Length: 407
Image (cartoon, rainbow, N blue to C red; front, side, top):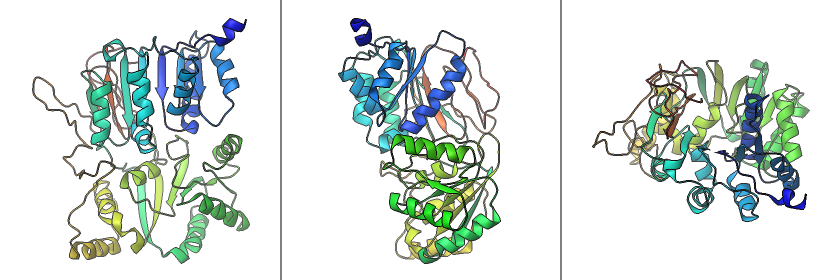
């Protein structure tokens, strides 16, 4: 029995994701698919009791969902072997790089006992694919297919985007007006700091709006309770800070996203408002804008125009002011620092297209070729031995030659 408790888990499938909330959600979905099968999914993440996670793996672990940090910890303890991995999935790849996980990811994929690229199928998913993500794909994937659903890094036309000019001192009163007007349904409010998340939540409760907040300083139990209260509608207003503990979660039925504090990176804006208008549903996004946000004005203008949204005149005016001081054109710079306009690395395959390599794109109708595919409003990489079609648009029908796609 002592030996059994110390044996290594040897999963055949590994899914890496950036946050404990996201890996927990993926694990719950995996349990549904594995019901009454021989497949045993397990989940490991930091901030929770490692003993219970180890006991779960001891009962069998075929599909492992993990955050990079906790997985490295368990590998160092000799409790997990990756030698049998056949399927590797990196979800929200850009978020994992944003959060500084690249060294751990490279160690997991390249520095341990995981089979090389030709011995596994690898898939990467992300709402944005700047050059640094594509370089990761180059290293981790073999003869991969690049699928773009819509325009990568853009927003869905299912979301009605509203930009309001609001000075900082007026934000609370304007927010109350919005909540009175759009009171029904789940509302996500994004703010800048943890302190602001708690302060705004307390303010809304005092104004008779059921609300809760979530951030990294809360215990795992507190975070899970806040998410459950939000999902079930007992606290239909959730106020997370910029640190995005819920920014990557797929929470159904979110009707309204409010950017109380606009981010400085347009990709964060895209991720945030993408919490609504999902799977063909409609949603509303409201952003509070003032001159303190002028650094993102050009990117915001581009996004609104691309999604056929109304462009407020004050945005155009502030953009012209910036141009008068040498502001230049839209940058869409992202993490890598380079521009990311329509024809740039974020929207297309950066590999040379010689030697028979051709980019594969999926438009609104969707298409897929080779092994696997992308979904939703982002894009995906896929490589490996399985044939199959990708999903285009918002969960459209699979297309392209081949079958057996396990999506």
